[in-house]
Image (cartoon, rainbow, N blue to C red; front, side):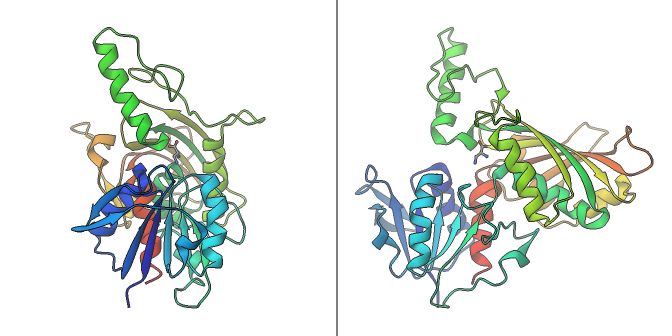
Length: 339
Ligand code: 2RA
């Protein structure tokens, strides 16, 4: 019979997208708990023509819950993820809290489904599965089909990341600043402390001692874990750009054996969850607006890397919806694998 669900962080951008995706995909459920902080407890929401009261997240919230979808930040996942597992729930966690824990599968269903093959519902014991970071998901949805064909030895990623990755408030501030700047007013800078509208800046994640920021090191480390390949060389530069909800990424790939652009294009055309938009004649390639609110990741600018000998290098350009495939859709596809 259908599982009982809980959505932790239901009022956030990803929490709301969880509900949209559950509904769009007719995900079966016997019951669903809407969980959030004390601040939101008591508020009402309607989901699939039924009224719900948002409940405050407590340890008891997970009694009788089969699948708990988390997207309420790393500290909430760290505190309540293990409690939910203890109460018998399978947790799909969108935060970074457990992604690099070797006991926790880090899963993109189209890429490495086997990593969670040992986790089932109804065994009377819980488990935790981590959803990768959005920029990792979007990059690997395109890079993995090529990697499977010709083994990537080095990947260089430059990301152009949307406001949504910093939450609903960041999206609101981008819109507000855009209006203010156009009206000749001083932009309101509360979220990023600098002007975002008509500007771009290095990703707001903390910068580490090696000069990389946390977002860039997520791409490096999560790729190695998801590909189960500690030898692949990855470097990244993550930039925040004034776009609402879809990330764009320029990806340079070097391969162990030759892979020409036509073969690469065919591979990508047949890759699950990927659409190729690669029309040189009309200069039509993926854009954030074109992938927003959609499930598929779009790939284009597929071309031989002219700085490499032969066909051992490719450049591609990828766009994907950060809230959907970058977070909520991927998490629910993981949950679907439990059914
Ligand atoms: C960002 N990857 O875009 C983060 C969101 N999880 O800032």
